[in-house]
Image 1 (cartoon, rainbow, N blue to C red):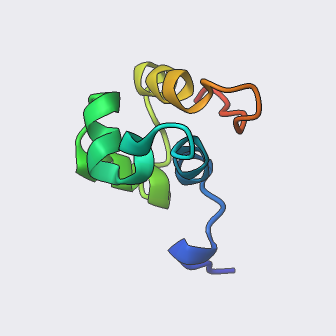
Image 2 (tube, rainbow, N blue to C red):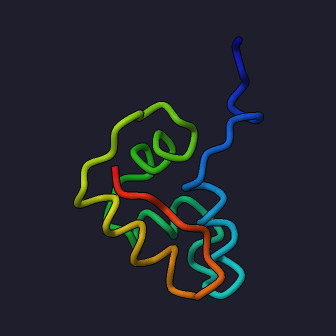
Length: 78
């Protein structure tokens, strides 16, 4: 069964959007990529599911920024 990117349940994008409520820099991929120290293209690939495996180092950075509040989405390690 094929799903569109729009229908994809990508936890990284959801986490960034939710965290942007308390950090304006995360409202855009450009701002987030600067904070996360990853390229905009890489972040796009993570958020759209193009990249199926994300290195532990990058996952650790995503967890640090996206789980800064208690109510954040739980991002599992890759």
